[in-house]
Length: 259
Image 1: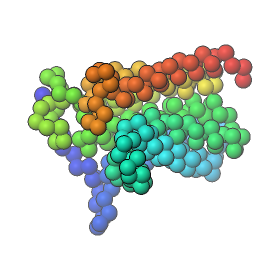
Image 2: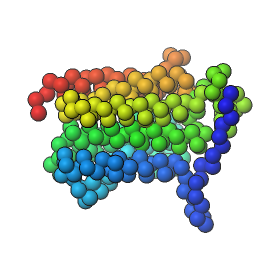
Image 3: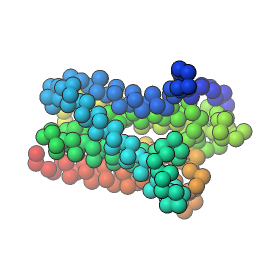
């Protein structure tokens, strides 16, 4: 067993203001890709500072609305039916990756349509960018001691402050590694190889994310208000099965599509 490194979720205090790692992860997850891939935006899409700022605003709105509605619909609908105004209280409840991903995708499609940009190529970049936010977000979950794994006897299991007295899988780190770092490296390699048609990289992202998370979810503690379906699968896994089907279907759709 490894001792859980109890890191303060608040990394900076300025009077009454508190700045948390989780919020920083969101900010960096949104801004870093635009900094790291500035050249790609300018050379491939002729998207300069104002264009990138507009896209960031679209993405921010899409991720927040989609992520929140995804959590409400998939993870706690009964609670919010009786208390609909609770949907607006972002500090209570949570956000859903799948909902946020759909919101980001719709934001890119809307942006591309409005500003006459190549939709499928922007979706490809969205897939690559998302891995950065996912990786940072899961590290922030780990710091917060939330979304921890199931009870385990593996040598690297940890006792989480919110998870009782038994050691558990650090499933947040599994997700940060596979859904963040590994998936980023795969997509980055495919992007630079120039071997895929527009849209296919995004399809690979959807497919592989579904694969990685589906299996990692077997080590993750299910949401208490939902539990497991059929005594085996979490809500996240059911959504990932849908992700796998959508990703594989889109891959072959874009492969056959003449652009």
